[in-house]
Length: 232
Image (cartoon, rainbow, N blue to C red):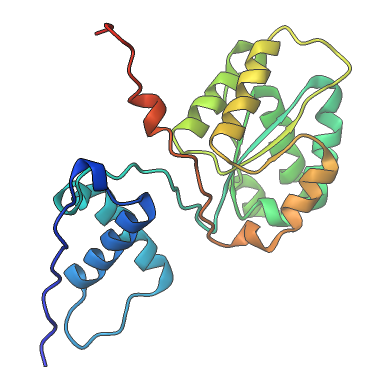
């Protein structure tokens, strides 16, 4: 018996708009029936999540009275890990990296300039032959020269999944405003963040480090669309 076509329920008026959860559920159902061939099993979980996000972004306005904001980003099993340390904390970070290098080499490492060079050297010394030559770390600018801002920008663009930032609580920094901005952005976009070795140990030991994960990010549509009075 052929599958029945998926019929989207009629949109409600502005005063009866559905909740965000209802809209997302409807989009997922539409995605499933739109792409599923007759007499086939449902797609696996990862494929379904990708399909779910695609249909929400592309077809949301076709089914619903308001657009669906993209407020959930899927982290893949291979994480993009930001690593940063102030001068007095660099040795702590290198020791932590040397202890956990077997896990870290399975992920993409992004570091600010000087820290990146030290980490790349430390991990290469742990590897043999061709693996050592092929291993590399993505290095940004040094923190005081804009590296922290680069990392913050990558977080806001969804290009960093995980941040280890060993900052120095005992010394003033010339780029202190950049440090605060980076930590604020990490909280804003709800990415796992460690500012000391103990937290970093708990994070790297989690089973989620090698699994897909979908953090929930606060919907800021109300702030973006706020009324600014007579401003253009």
